[in-house]
Length: 260
Image 1 (spheres, one colour):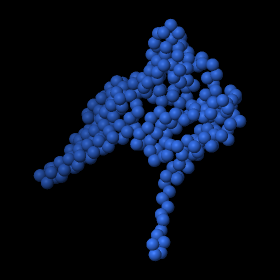
Image 2: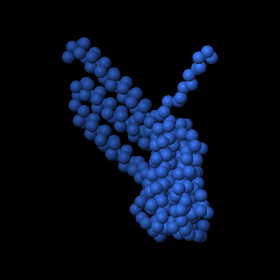
Image 3: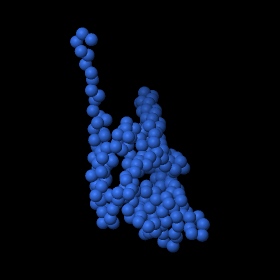
Image 4: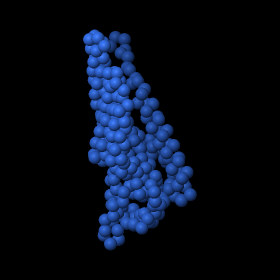
């Protein structure tokens, strides 16, 4: 290879390294934004793993630009990736289980539940564990993954009445307008709802990116639970669609009158 050809190869490698650094930085920002509400340790681990994947791909491309077979490098990267996945498997498993348990498990903080041989009142639900307070004042920490593998019994009287629907609004959505529209829509379901407990919106978190809400609805009869849940989810989706459409419409302009 002559000098000009070698310089061209070095230029290609330099461009690949620069693009890799850029994409790694972008990936870190995206992962940080997506996991800002997650456990900090898990968020950092996932962000490092994402950056490592981007860097690994960039390293393979740079080695190929040099005309060297990337087989050994791919083997090393594979071994490192397996070790990383094994290292963070348990935290990711519990964090993912918290997400699904929060949506599908019929219990909340304050309820008394039984999981396997353990029972108690739920006093905290964090990214890794759900903490129970037993009748003899013992604290029991259950990994969140437990709720995906064992039956959960809610011992709280009439716990079947409560439906909890998580909602995420974009930062441009007016919260009061959305709540008013949803309350009017839910009023059409009042024949299926317990009149003693009107629908309630609870703000879980709020930032520039958006707002996380929880809509709580109390049904009148046990057989109404699934139909009402499906109808509430449908109405939430429809209202979110109308909100997005109104946000994309251009603002009406006021043309000046002649002579003004």
